[in-house]
Image (cartoon, rainbow, N blue to C red):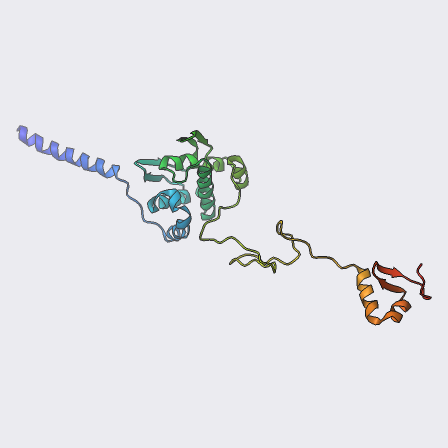
Length: 241
């Protein structure tokens, strides 16, 4: 009688153990085609920051859908839900870029999952120089702040950081930007410290050149003479006014 009762009990216990093991193991959902393309585009920019391709995929899908994000690495796991609503890919790129540069400013180049979470949602992390408190890029975004305001608040430049795969535009002597995709810079347009306005030509010089080309008598007849000091008005008799 006792053995008959023990068998169902052990079967039930084994079922609970199997269920608990299954719940404790995170199963990554397959990426949508759009998410996969996005991750492929930004992998070179953010793979080191995320720590792994799996972490980057979780960040992308979690921010895109507003669902739970799971980051693993450095002997720890961080699980959090973004405080923002579902974001477009452009905003995801901006959020990850700001968080990455915010961490880098604190001397953290290879962040752990908990440090990434702090940079995104806010929190305090310990560094070699002491504790650093992050406001959280996503936390600020959820409060209705624009990206320019967030950049000012956390102390980073509002533009996206450059990567090795995107060459910086280089302007040659001709004034034309040679980097792919760069805008053409017209000579004489102020684009930086090295750019200068093209010299202007006044009407007097143009008239003087025209008068000189016509010959001395013609210049005198027109009432102008060209000398070393510039253009002078003359009387028809040749004297200066």
